[in-house]
Image 1: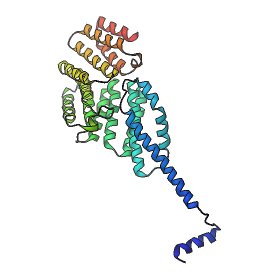
Image 2: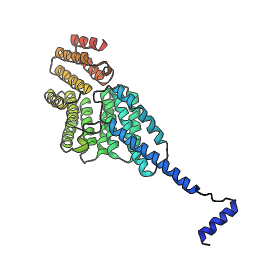
Image 3: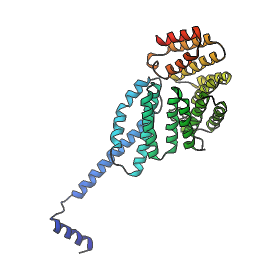
Length: 326
C-alpha cells in the first residue's frame, strides 16, 4: 500500500468515513456549474457595459436609466460572489464603467448628490480593478458635476487628479481630463491655465484613434472635443473661438443629440451677451428652451440657461426668467 492509500485508509478508520461512489465527480460538476454561471453573468455584464456606453441615442435620460435597472441588480448580485483574482479585477472594471454611466445620467438629470455618490462608487471600483485609465475617466467625468453646478474650484481639483492618473500617453481619458480642466480653470478666471489645458486637450485629441476616438461615453470624438472647447472659450469670453468651436461641433453632430445641441446653443447665447447684445442672447435662449422636449428641462440644459439668466440685465433677464418659469 502506498503512502496516500495508507493515509486515506487511516483517516477513514479514524472517522468512520467511507468514500461514496461519485461524490468527487458531483463536487466537480457543481464547481463547473458555478463557474459556468459566473462566466455567463460576467460576459453578460461586459456586454451590457458596451451596450449602455453608446450614449442616449435620442432617448431621454430617465428612459436610459430605467433600461439599466435590471443590469444594476445583476451587477450587485455578481459582485457579492467570490471570484478568482483576475475575474474580480475584470468585474471591478465593468462595475466602474456601469456605475460611472449611471452617474453621468444622474448628472444630466441635475441630481447632483446621487451623481456624486455614483461617481465615488465608480472611482472605488476603478481603483480595485487597477485600471488607471478607467480611474482617470471616472475622475474627469466626476469633475463635470461641480463644474456644471457652480463649484468650478472643486471641478479643477478633480480634473487635475484625473489628468495625473491618465499619464502622458494619448487616451480618451487624458483628453477628457484636459478639456474639463480647461473649462474649470476658465470658470475660476485662470485664463493662462485654461489656455494651457486647451492646448493639452488639442494635442492629445490629434493623436486619438480607435476606441479612444469613438462616439461613446468612454470615447473622446472630435464632436465632443469641440463641445468642451466651446464651453471653455465661452467662459473665457473669447467669443470668436467659441463660435468656431460651436460650428465645428454642430457640423459633426449627426445623431439627434438633443442635449448637446441645446447646450451649444446656450453657449452661443452667452457669447451674444458677452458681445454686448443681451436682447439677442435672451431671444436665442428662449427659442432653445421652447423647442426643448419636456424630458430635458430639469437637468443640465436648465442649469446652463439659469447661468445665463443670472447675468442678463433688465428686460432680457425678465424675458428668459419667464420662459424658464413656464
